[in-house]
Image 1 (cartoon, rainbow, N blue to C red):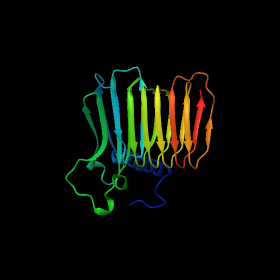
Image 2: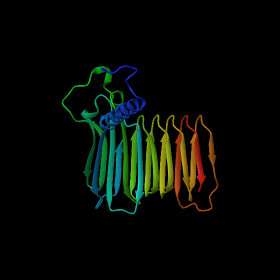
Image 3: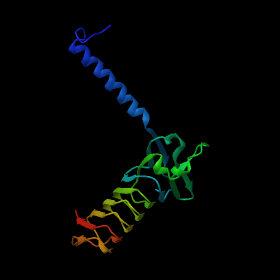
Image 4: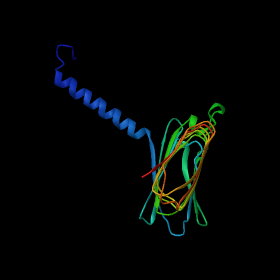
Length: 217
């Protein structure tokens, strides 16, 4: 039996290491991470129903594949999943309850029982449509057309588009681009717009309570 006198300092360090290692494994195992890779042939648009997803990010590159990575964490993480459906030229994604287990009435909304994030890597110059009640959105790359509708989340865009429409209720809108003709309106927020010599792209930015910032970069 160990006593305070018999436990050496190095023994304590080893024990602490193993405790930390076990806790680290537990933390990794606690998350439900799913990755899917899809050929982009014939896909012209990405449509995301982001309700109950806290964070949504989309990045473009010179690729012919679409990679979807979702992370779910929480008590009911195994009862939900990011479902991917292809309909004609549109790839649709949404968070759905996929198990037969019933969720208590006081936890009907998915964000009350899980923390969900979604990251997508897509080819350049696709159309992207995102709708979310609680989610914040980060977009990076080259897009054809963007349409973003957010209630509580913020929207950050860095890159190029032909046309973009962004509407938020409470969240700020931040854009960094090198081409813009801008129509911006915020009922209760501040607006800061850089000037652009290249005005090929058209941006329509609207918020009720959020600030709007557009930077020439």
